[in-house]
Length: 389
Image 1 (cartoon, rainbow, N blue to C red):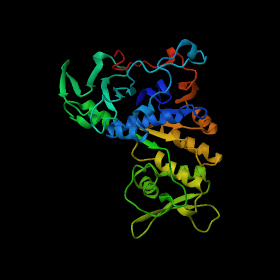
Image 2: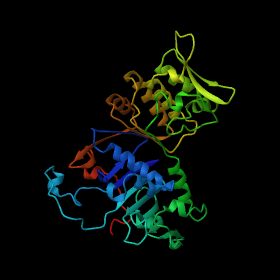
Image 3: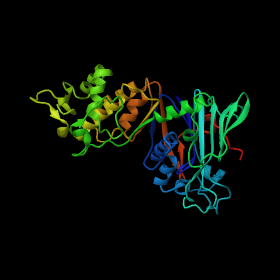
Image 4: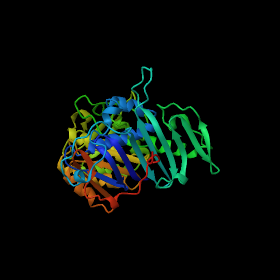
């Protein structure tokens, strides 16, 4: 489990260090930085997928993601006074992302490239990457260190160069993967690749989840919900079918879920409701009902993941369904580290009653996203590997 997340110079996240628990509920007013936090986490996950540079390009390039405010917040600004506009930046700017868990920590630093004749001269470069043992970085705890194109590993107390000329556009996860010499790289790569993000389920009239779809065993629901029927049937067969039935009756008393398996191999969702002579098909379900079933399939996955991030799961749900959704989320937090980014005070209140809930409320201070109520000594211990450079 991740205990600390650190982000520096990403949009409104100038210098955020956040403690984490099994269930993390992120809330705050509009434009406080919740979406930026979500996007930064997704960007961090791209390091293990080999797509961090492309992900930055889709956001408009590295320069457009940098913190746009002054380089240093003065005491006057921190007290809430109007900042004085400064001139050009005095130092190289780095976008830095990192996390620390029980066994290992990881950080990546990205910057603009040196001038060159390449047509890819605007592509950002990975300037520094590190993996260390333990929850806080120390020079003596570093296991893997990457400085521009040189990747080193610590072997028997001494540094050994693994790759002398690494591609600056590829993470270490794409360039070294030796389970014997660098087992920490393999382990972290698999862990990060296991993170799941759910932020947009289609429920419109043409949504794939409403229509019969070719089905195969599906222990993990696709991020857009296209394989809903197959995912639900998989839970019935190899997952906790009792929890699935309970989740349906919890939200829709007297109802029963059934997956129709057609001769051509297509699966379809059917919901039997009390008083009706036939089941409702996927095309007949309301947006809220369909979305709730999608959350059921995601949260009751028979293959738990290291981390699951839910972005505004209350969207389209009737307020009466919120308590049932909260119980599903709490249940998932027993085996998975769960993030919930939400605007719904009803959902937030329901989750905060759970003893292990880590409630994080964000706010803006002159453009900078901060954790409400967090003082200097409340921040978890965090040191960037290149903080002295």
